[in-house]
Each structure stands twice: as C-alpha cells, then as structure tokens.
Amino acid sequence: MAMALRKSSSLLVNRRLLPNTICSYHRKVVDHYENPRNVGSLDKNAKNVGTGLVGAPACGDVMKLQIEVDENGKIVDAKFKTFGCGSAIASSSLATEWVKGKSIDEALRIKNTDIAKELSLPPVKLHCSMLAEDAIKAALSDYKIKQQDREKNAKLSS
Image 1: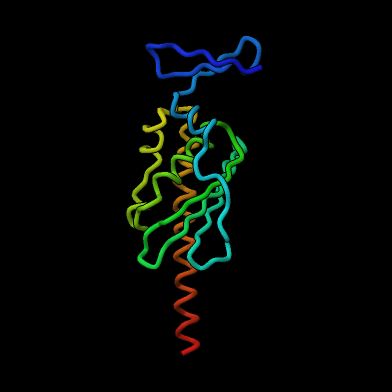
Image 2 (image 1 turned 90 degrees about the horizontal axis):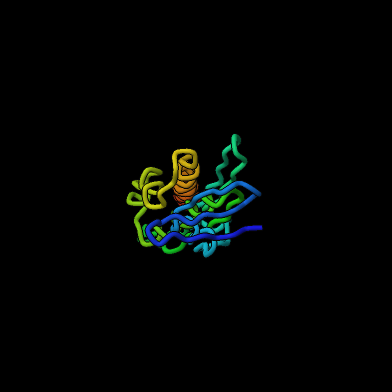
C-alpha cells in the first residue's frame, strides 16, 4: 500500500512502502518515475543509432539508453528502458531529455554529478546517476564504432 504525503515547505514526497517504513524522494524523482520521458526503443541495427546497456550488480539495476544521431552529428532522439528503482528510472528519463539536441561532444560532458544534483539524489542513490552517465557514454561509443565500421566499408567498396 503506497501513500503519498506532501509537505508544503518541503520538496520531498514521502512514500509508505512497507508498514513502519517511509522513504523520501525529491519531487523531481517522483515526477520522472511517475511520468517517465522517452521510454521505448530505437532500431539497434540502424547505423545512426547508438545503444548503451549498463548494469549495477550490487543493486540489480539495468539501464538501456539509445540515441539517434542525424547527419550533422546532433542527437535528435533518445529512448530508454530501465529495470530498477525509482531513482534509476528518474536518472534515465532525465538523461534522455538532456542528450536530445546536443552534439556528441556536448553529450559526453553530461556528468553523473549534474544528474544527481538536478534530481537531489541522496548519497545512497548516487550509483543511479553513475549508471545514467555510463549509459550515455556506452551509447555514444556504440554510435562511434558503427560510424567507423561504415567508413571502413565505404573505403573497401570504392
């Protein structure tokens, strides 16, 4: 039985998850958890799509983040699927919002500390923002590898 309590002077939302247990989440985490942005998948075989799949064995969170890049090197779309806690889902959702419209180099500058600060993640949940940063880097790396392979194939065929 989940029950939300709002305090007017606080930005936290309390959730009663188990009897006698209350966890506090910042309202931005709750918003991204309850209304996640950019959930879904892109075509992983498309040459202009990079896919990053990362996980945290300690807590079981798994995050897939995909980016679609146009011919000018701008990220035009991003999707995610995350199996994990509310903070992991919120970190993924925010990451997809932040990478859209950025160049590859700009997206590489997104740091877990920025994500954690924006979501007001407590120290015990910082690994969620680290996963999001790692997922962005993995997706960008996959995209770059596809582009290198495309260039090699183009040279071989000419």
